Amino acid sequence: MLKEFRCKFCHRLLAKVGEGSKVEIKCPKCKTMNLYQDETVIVYEIPENNVTKKIIARGLVQYDLLKN
Image 1: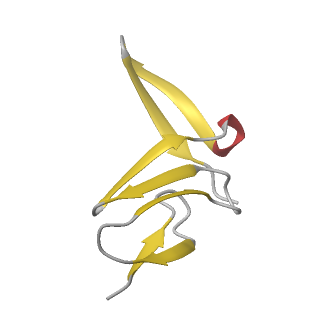
Image 2: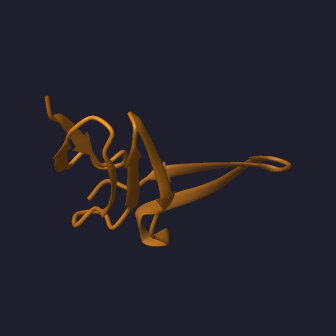
């Protein structure tokens, strides 16, 4: 059974993957790097022009995705 693998920021469908798959895909819409590995999705690169950065408290930063 294939499962949908969507970008964790813009939710665009990137692929349909089977069990035990390891997939690394750069989203063509928002340019975010997504890594799918055994039911776990890791986002490890987000272009700076797609997020805003707010310093909430000392040592605590909040990132918000900008809408396209």
